[in-house]
Length: 425
Image 1 (tube, helix red, strand yellow):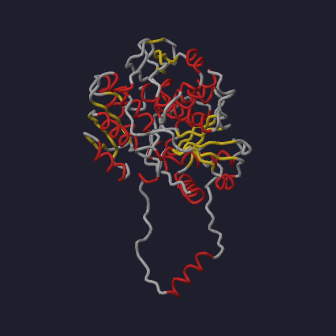
Image 2 (cartoon, one colour; image 1 turned 45 degrees about the vertical axis):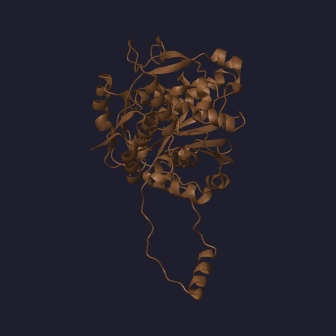
């Protein structure tokens, strides 16, 4: 495996001030967010052959962790990119790909950013990590911190699903359950970050954490034989996955390894749709007071500076944004499971539900190749369990049941793909 990283420093996305490669969360001059920079000229001379080995750290050259001993791993990355012809037929699209990140070690796309976040904590000498989470980020950071021998202080909201709670309780050094939603605690927690109480493993500001999710796009690029899809739909809470994916495709374009970046679509839950609403209305980003959504990982009403960055990338790059109601998300979850055998969580399938809406309103061309990022397994979520009441059979009753169940019926799975209602654009 290559041990080289081509990272050169940090750059402010607002005033373009440059900084050395150090743990810094915002620009000193304007308090803007920072993004990592790379020596793309040197990388381009090496060519795609620079990527060697397996998993997420195959892409170490475009990640900011210089020393191999800091590259913590649980075997994340290289998740399947699945052709979904039956679901494509249901949706009426020519070609549908699902990038299923539910196969990561903790069942979520968060493992990509946890790997680089915890690696950065090691790189910069921290012994304690922390995150405010609705579930997936907490279990992922806790697991990777344990793997790295670091202490983790995990804050999770009280409505997180039981499987996620059990996972965090097992892996976190310290687990704190808080009342309210993400937006209620993150401001107070950020003040403790400023006091250097722990390493920031949150999604709001840390460029080193976000960077791990760049590997999604690099994998899609390789898995499509270097011909990326026309459209990529990414889940958005504060925008970390979306931003990282946009940046990756931009790097690939600058390197000359692809001709054109895909059209990027930001997918949100209607109950937490601040970015999609602002994009649709052509207005600045306005925080929302939100309640519960089945898409727990998208439950951020105030996406802050990352949300503003996402909105800017959408507008500058000619992207799209949409949202879906909880009922549509659950319908997409069932359709994906019944047509393709992929059991994903509600947060993961919000992308699919939003795609259904955008197709219904003719905002996406069904003749294109479309890839949806499905970001979590369904094995970490809660739902209504089928009845456990059993039936005693003899041969005749069993035969009658089998024949009745196998008779032709009209219970084919479907997506809730109705046009947007109310303010869910």
